[in-house]
Image (cartoon, rainbow, N blue to C red; front, side, top):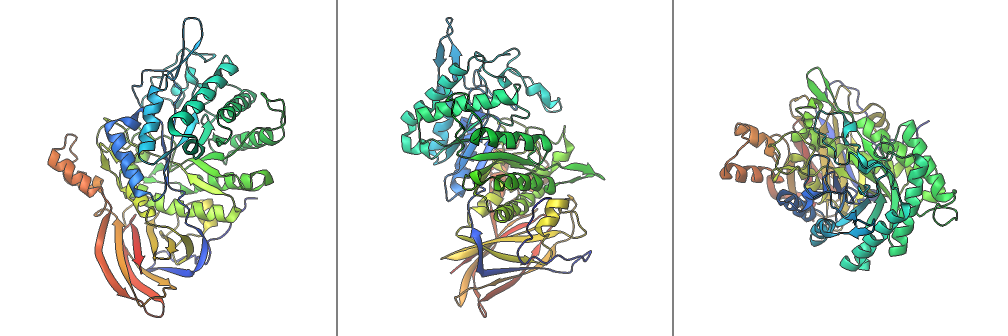
Length: 555
């Protein structure tokens, strides 16, 4: 039987249509730390990192976060010339000379990590995939996948085990040693390393061969830098029976089995990683999201971690946490992904992250981060429906949710919402009732408080705005400065601005400037002094369908 905990104090309304929703925030009741679990991002194509729009977006992501942002990318050891394609990247870090001797070349890898370090970001460094010269089945090596093709086409020579585990281990050792020399021991100690990606899909060897690779990899990392942190295994479909078998076997291997390298019992595991994905569909001519499926993966992962005393304090990272599984599958080949350009993505993100905090609270795990697998796609059509944070250097609405998160700090506090779905319902059934999920996430520190409010439903159907009565209790001063930020069809929304221009694929400089401005987080009401009565701040706001509001309260 699954373990769930209900949202603290959350009322569950069964009225088909509420005239007004209510949100009550109690600053006196702390529920946990406002950990920046959202400050983690990732993407398939590593070479986008140092390209024009990639560098611009990374700078913006770094600027919005009060803490260093962690970045995870695939293909850091893949053989090739560094030219990116959808779901493809390469660094040529490892080749061999005519005698079979290793040749290491860190030029492209350094370009990627340099870009992060210069912005105060940190790698969640993925050790993979298999270089062509080491693959047991190297031909074909570079895939030719494109959106609409079977996903299996991407699984080519890079997905196979090494023909020489010692050469693989030497490659890992040299990479970690090089990183420590280039960036400093203290810096690299703050990173996380991890092996591969989704071995229940991206690995063409056996499970035993993968655990063997894990042992050779972790031993090499620790020999190069004993204080480095490494973990695994970034499994896909965490709630499924196959993924659960992999995860239990991984825990058994790390704590009970004989290590393939040392001959002793166990292997290092400094972080535990798994993936969580939703599953949108087209229903009756519109997109219907499935947040519940993503939350079920998270619930299953946290439940497994909580069942092992050995994992009690180990950092838990959701290595990919998204509404669905293929960032490079645009809405033209996958119409169910049409949610990505507008406010459905932003409201989903706000509502789902709030539930991640609650699930972690319920299982009492050391939840450290959730990687949003979304970045940008260089030199692609405008608003093509990729799962990305920006298009051609213009920010999408979803990025502004993370700007809001960046203003939330200190402690999380109790929230009660008359139309906020309780945790069990949204995990079991998603947000598909006769009313919207009108909920909130709230935080406070010594200088103020922040309340994020959303108006969400799985069905991407526009409905009239809903009035929401908000009360914030426990304010100890007579007046506060209140600033209201908003993401909706009229604010913080470059996509709607682009459509009003006629959806140009070759916008002018003036149009691009206007789109860049429209993509920034908008203040809908100028900061104002508001009286506090009996320690309560009370106001009513109109929340359009799929809107996200942040109330920033300063004292």
